[in-house]
Length: 284
Image (cartoon, rainbow, N blue to C red):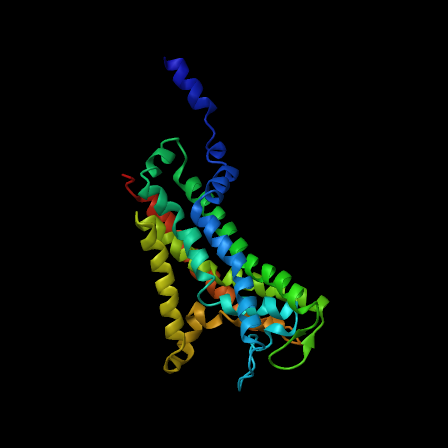
């Protein structure tokens, strides 16, 4: 009996437990994943239909990407990114990162994963990496599908800018890629907050809703100009800094500040999540 136990212990490799591929497939097959991506893919078609029914967007006192949406395929993609920033894209990020651990606890399967035995830190890393990958994919899908839909509807042309002037289509693509990359980095603070809440509660809705609610609160606080320079410490203050990538002269300042702030907050929140989960009494 002792020999059998020793053989099992000798063959145990923590790094072989819960492969990343297995966790990714588990999350991919979940209904909420399919619904989120279906909505993101359908949204460009819904916006296109709205423009087709309502006609060309009217000109406001201040030109935005929405007023230029029908100018070309790249403009339509930029419009969808503009519409998604601030709230729409927060939801899938909060869902993928906030639901991942709490749902296991809600299903009473978390303790069985740890008894496999999967080390706690490895379990968290696997779920965090998969959550971030799905979040990045969700953010990328919206403007990518928008680019295809917009090009089919309005043609392949220059990206007209709200500030005047334009970028050639070939120059606009890498600029749009930079903008999407910044949005992904900017949303890491939401992902980290949702992930931390996911380790603190057994209710997935509480983790997801808490992250979305706090994201809304920071947006409201950023709108209060009386806070002055304090607003620069809010991630929401920099959420539209990606527009600096879509200027005749590429500007990095705002994007660097925004990404650095979001990543700094994310590191702190993730450290708290790992610390809390490492000491948590898993009973579900």
